[in-house]
Length: 493
Image (cartoon, rainbow, N blue to C red; front, side, top):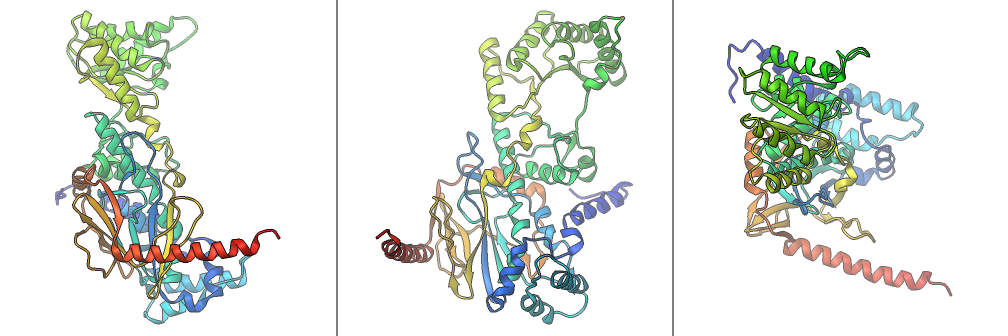
């Protein structure tokens, strides 16, 4: 969407977008934004620290929700890459960090060789990390287990990125959730604000939700101001207003009715909150009374969010129909998930024989449910040093990493994980995201959402290319041979 040059909000909007992504930058560029052991490791082996290396980011599991299987949707580049690459580091900040970690930190270690090698190749105060990042573009569907991003550069420097890059779990989970919700209902499902640990999280995940399913409705007014082409604010009555006219010397029903009526009289539309007293008795009567009292508008519906939601949707529809009231929007909430939406829709069809076109889900806490690293088991692993493939072995299924400088291609309905320079028949799926410390990925959110539409359900499975498969086979054989021999040596006499 092209911004109008006479838009009075444009300057503030652009400044806020810059501030939003700037807030993601690691606390002003302090290079302590990583795990402590990064300092100790690369201090111990300075020769390896400066060598070229490859690292992959993979998610070992799907999100565990029906309909997703092992599919995931890539999202979040704008915010996640900003953590290290929104702007260059400062030479003075790096030197300050060196002094702190060598003189004051409880762990007196700093990989000077790695950082000096970087500083010696650049002049001036601004320092760009000599790191290239390849990965799936936004909206690309991929499988758990397939590397979704690949990082190349001096090993110790790339290593510093691990905690920040593992945070991709959040937008990837969100984009995948958005796709499942889109499949469950043609209606948008609102994404609120209050569950967010902080507003940056809410904005980041709202953008990911848009990529995964084009969800637009939100109660986050800042999101709509920042991205009016993507988001629409939605708001109606809250319990705090509904109960504000209560007193001990009047009926609860009259107090509730007063607030409903005043809101509709002033605003002209509403989703009447019916469960303040009891959704199936007092609230039902009051809602119908207000709707009939305002024939001047057909934009007054109801909202149910406690008790037997499916039964209440049927009840309200049937009561309105019996009174000759044309179908009105019925918003249903209470931890609504895609499965809950399907349940409500199915009950409605069963009881009324009609399609639930007037039912509108409010997802609430679903968007934040199980949004953490362990849901998808984010894993950032070293896969190569110089020209040597590296593998992290494991006794647990699915935890073994793949060796080499990796890329992913599309071959029909299969994904193929291949070595970067390997000749494999297929269409490359990776794009370059970061070039020598500079973000080069600039797709619009609509382009990313289009890709999610095209690629969800497109692939059957994934496999290793001949070269990567050979590397893994040889490593596994070595491991089996060596562990078998060691098992004999350590066995009790």
